[in-house]
View 1 (cartoon, rainbow, N blue to C red):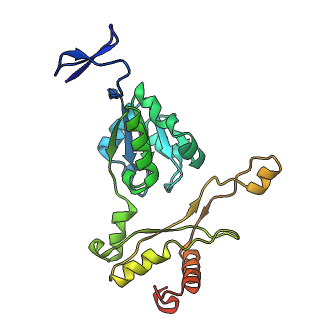
View 2 (view 1 turned 180 degrees about the vertical axis):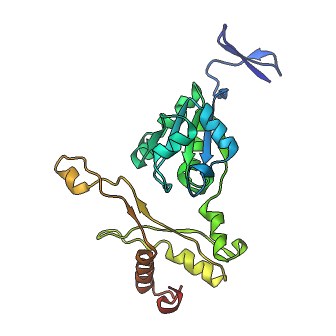
View 3 (view 1 turned 60 degrees about the vertical axis):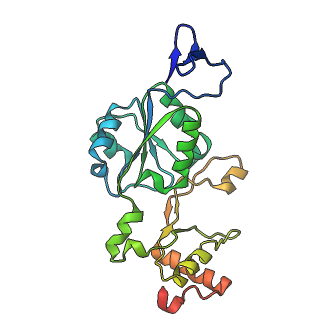
Length: 248
């Protein structure tokens, strides 16, 4: 048992009854919490009862709009939650200013809202780790995600292999790192869940060269676009992972 004495600003270890050195690397967890809350897959009513209660009682609320998006806008969420102060965390915010999400949880409760389930993207796991390294208490509120909902297509979840992401190709970057994973799954008789790319608030680099900050229109990869890229990957790799005229 360890107690932090506010008046003397010293920490007592009750096992040895000795004060800890001021430079001790021990992190004392705050009583405040960073809640990472899954919102589900559809609209504002997919949030769990526990998640809703925590959102309503939090001092700050952030909505992650980088790895996925809901089918509704922030205004619908605010109306349902009974608050008007939700901060949208876009790609730049999440990647470059993540500390602005978890550090406020040292002084008050913070809710970080995630479409789907919080633990399905490495971005959110990284924020959890960084928050705990800063002594911030983290709690996760789970919800439905594409990883489980894919079972509605009739394929057994037990028979899925590695999940892959299909990123947008461009003139200078046409990655096929997903290809060997698909091949591995098929050789093992397993299905593959392909997560298709989205581009939200992507910077226009040509405009940036001219000193202007401009964002490109949102893009959401279609099944047809992903199929074309899968066919191209097979043409490049020629590993026989799938037959374009039969599989796609």
